[in-house]
Image 1 (cartoon, helix red, strand yellow):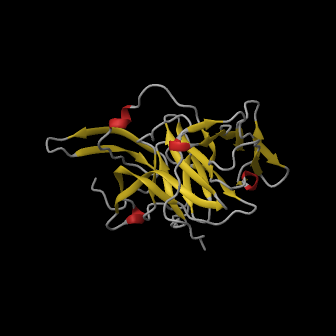
Image 2 (tube, one colour):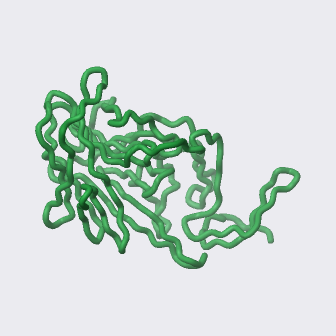
Image 3 (cartoon, helix red, strand yellow):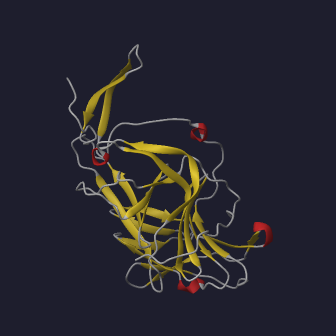
Length: 296
């Protein structure tokens, strides 16, 4: 059972004062998400788009990070690299809630959403797990460098309680630059070293002279954050994410798009547009996205 929380979560400013990156977001699960056996994943409430790895935000404070590796041939199976993360210790089991709704939506016309499909599925620029510990929230949002994750400690919260347990990986390591590397099958995810800061009057950012470095707890895949002195009467934020990227993204002005294909290998060999505006595609696929008979 999820813990009841108050209605309006606190949203601190980004350390770099970055706006949300519009192509990156978390979309509500309205039946479009299934597992490798075709079973619905109703436990996952939001799924990310626009950045790698895919972050699936599930109930009970559970988070899944996924990437997909396609084989050389269309018939080759897709390898899913999945690592899960959840707060432990004195953590509470809470469900995520979307805030900062996007001005665009997605439609899913898939076998698992038949017959009507899942249309006008809302997306959010920020999703919050509120009160994963007493006074501590977990945020997912974005910036120019990709997805970000922050742990927001309201006044009076204890950052020593914050512990993250990773599961599914081969190993965890902290490199020379303070990044947490989550290894899986010879590859790894990187969680950059967290930037620590506080928030003052008028949402002003107050830098502090230490970083929230990672500390591996022996055995069990648990990670803690090191911290030093701070003002306990002000919010404290540990922000995990890539540094701001330069330049602009042409997708920021994208008005509409669609795609075809599925989660297995798909290859387009030819395409054409007729006089009536119909789009024809030929090729091969090992996905099951075509859910009705197609005339040859």
